[in-house]
Amino acid sequence: MAKLAQALAHHASAAGAQVAMRDGRRSLTRSELAGWVGGVAHDLGPAPETVGLYGSNSVEWAVAFLAASAAGKTIVPIPVFFSEGQRSHLIRDAGIARVILTDGQSSDGFSGSVPVYRLAERARAGLPAQARDGGLIIYTSGSTGNPKGVRLMSGQALWSSETLAKAIGASSEDKYLSVLPLPLLLELICAIMIPVLVGGSVHYDGVVAQSVGIGAASNIAEAFDRARPTTSVLVPQLLALYAGQLAAAGARPPAELRFVAVGGAAVPQALSRTARELGIPVFEGYGLSECSSVVAVTRPGAFREGTAGQPLPGLEVIIEDGEIVVQGPSTMDGYLHGGAAPRRWRTGDAGSLDPDGFLTVYGRLDNLIVTPYGRNLSPEWIETMLVGDPRIGACVMCQAGEPARLTVLLIPSRLGEGWFRAAAEKEIAALVSRACEPAPDYACPQRAAVISREDASRQGLFTSNGRPRRAEVQRYLQDKVPTFEVQR
Image 1 (cartoon, rainbow, N blue to C red):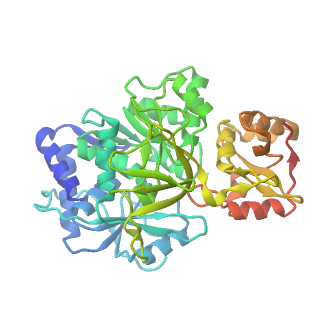
Image 2 (tube, rainbow, N blue to C red):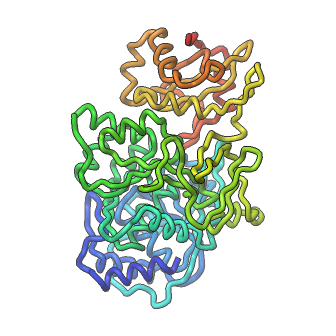
Image 3 (tube, rainbow, N blue to C red):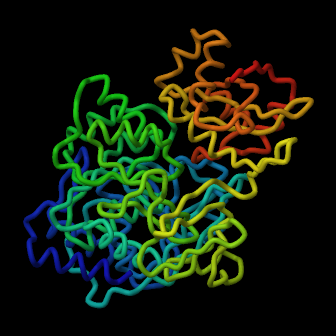
């Protein structure tokens, strides 16, 4: 990723006094950023090794990433939302020699003796004359406990950054608001790599990012008003929160805002329409870590509601037996400690392409439900409809009970907790029925149950980054958990 250091040096030379990044504690010009990155890269030294990055969204985290990149290290972001056991596994599995704490946090969360580099403002130094290409390993939490490493050692993230920047028209005039945790690959690309490549600026809101990481509510509208960005990336739950806050206040987003990518899960069409009516320029996309985060995205001039957009130029996306298959320069080298990945990556996601090349994603193939009447059903289709209601923070649909019936487990959002506590079962059933109105009868939940976010966590029903553990949910619902009827 030597190109990042080259771009950093170029923009520092061209307009060194312009602000490159800021957070709630400090602001750095392009020249200051290049100097600090050079100093830390010098401290790290040229020896090839694997280093970990740990901390909240901040200028320091970005400096650490850029310095490790310039020094030719293999970089492993360590999500703060991973459990202690997951972090310990990650450190051992990746063979990390140093953990860089970017924001003054201690290493108490790590098991064993791990050398720690506490990032501080070092003496300024020039960027390495010849920055070395390192690599990137992204750990996915998976659905079974221990995270696994995705090897992006051949410039995949850089290719995705450059290609995505061109697709969305990113420029030095852009100001990006970072509200998702930086260890998420899409956020790392959009909040560090693209701004450095094009010479844009970034505002890191560590408070909102921390709230997102632990699944808590935040004042996202205030964050947008404070930073007044041109671009940002949100997950659907955060978009719903932002739209709800704007609607409640009778407000509009900043006039400068031109592009809000929404990823991580499907966006309910009703939410997408509501957000656009409020003035939020929403563009949905699709990707996965194994393909360096971005496979397709809607963008100005190439937008079709209900789809994830067209594939990035340079990627070949086809549908084989209903499965999305990707080939191109962004596919991973393979999983850590595993063999090389095939050139044609079978994503495991069900989807279709229309005649104009717009991709529609239905859900995971291995989540497919076959109803007693022989219908094939992607539960994500119905779950997306349900989370379009801002009172529902998450939900999982599966077959449960005797006889097996479509049953949905509802987790209230922070905004909806009070409503669910006060609501009678028939009111909750009516909410479910209304949310699923666009779906045919055979696809709709017949029964429902409610669980709090805290209880769902204690039961181990979700991964650390919020993905449902469907087998655990099904066992939970089978274990004589009270459910109630949902009538169409």
